[in-house]
Amino acid sequence: MSVLVYVEHADGKFKKSGFEAVAYAKAIADQLGTSLAAISIGNVTEEELGSLSRYGASRILNVGSEQLKTFVNQAYASVIAAAAAKEGADVVVLSNSFSGKGLAPRIAVKLQAGLVDGAVELPDTSGSFRVKKTAFSGKAFAVTEITAAKKVIALNPNAFGVKEQPVDVQVEAFQPEIRGNDLKTVIKDIVRATDKISLPDAERVVSGGRGLKGPENWGMIEELAGLLGAATACSKPVSDADWRPHSEHVGQTGIAIRPNLYIAIGISGAIQHLAGVSSSKVIVVINKDPEAPFFKVADYGIVGDAFEIVPKLIEALKAHKA
Amino acid sequence: MKILVCISNVPDTTTKITFTDNNTQFNTAGVQYILNPYDEIALARAIELCEGGKGTVTVVNVGESSTEPTIRKALAIGADDAVRINAAPRDAWFVASQIAAYAKEQNFDLILTGRESIDYNGAQVAAMVAEILDVPSVSIIKKLDLDGTSATLEREIEGGKEVISIDGAFVASCAEGVAEPKIPNMRGIMSARTKPLVVVEAQAVPELSKIVSYETPAPRGAVKQIPADQPEQLIALLHSEAKVI
Image (cartoon, rainbow over all chains, first blue to last red):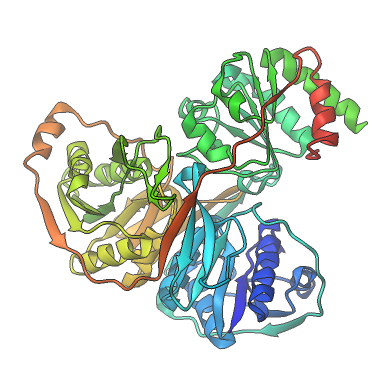
């Protein structure tokens, strides 16, 4: 019995959510009194692989295949399942990222494992194996018992704090055979907006709603976000009106986020919007309507005109940073 | 061309979520059920791809007879026929096993789902169905175009997108951007009543996991109001009290 963690990278660099997955898997291994192995797929340098040891991964399987340079969930799932078999892993952990969501179900079917996606806490392993996950788009949590012998857990980004616990590391090349049938999807292009912070990974988010009156007024939102090192987001009416791209829509039918800081400007706080953001650690609401429902779930609130308050906030933030 | 769209029957987005029986059962009292909003996107794209006699759209739902109004809505929107696999949808693994067992014998060119259901948010069914059928899958797509048997898709990734091509049959889960949901017209609503809705019995599937209880998020403390003329106070509080900047 052991624990295996798949660590995702973007262009050869591990992501914060990947380190979180390693730290989480290490904590599960400690809890079960067993060992942890990590697996990386694609072109990652030895030095970057070594960075996983900071979070407790002492053994790393490196699949440095040219065929698997880009993400093909079928082939990646086969490789991870093969690694789990080789390591005798009963628990497989990965990040509940966009790629993780395509990968975890395939791994679970291959291993006939019980799958919990969107995990937010360490499993309770006293007696049965129970994992708490988000449900009803952030309106509730469901405690799921994995009854199968094998378990796959996809951890939500920003749900489990990374803790450094450096260990000695051993990197081993792993080259399982890849079936042709696993390579039917071809990645033609990868487009990444490198100048922007990715919303699902962001620790801070500044979000605008219909109260901003039009797309031309997003300059101050972007400036505030830039100063905070935050990603920008928006409410559903804003993306429906094409003021902002769909990829920025947070809420029940958009994406669910859980940053450390969420600043909502000109968003009233409909139940569908709150569902997607209520897991944020600190919520700030700026709205001219004192009756806006968002104030009921906010930690800090300012009642007033965003067009007056946001520029003042930007000045105050510049002064704070200076 | 034959397209299968997998649909779920979920609580309306405005539902206040509560539980009964010592927080072990979802409280369905007074809950309105709807066609899962992401599945509406998948259905709309399937109908567009089949326009002008280019193919047929079948919808499949794993559910008890209470889901039939939602299935009829999908038929009213424009699906050609429907299948209901008669069972309570225990979890994603159960649902995916049922859909794959049905699809195995039908030779669909394309199977679409929504990116996730808005109740349990698993985002698992599409990739599980594909794994059981041993065909490619792409989760959370923003765009889908077909050219003969070759498809071009765009998939969302953190901070960007991937452009993907696939030849042959595959499964994809659809997010915003793939299509605009369609509103049924009167002709659609009338014809939905007579379109075929076949009920098939479910297969036995081993249990791998089960939900044992629910929790609701801890309530937040009262909001701390900051005077509108002193927004610099907010920066100070976020720094020294909340410690997030």
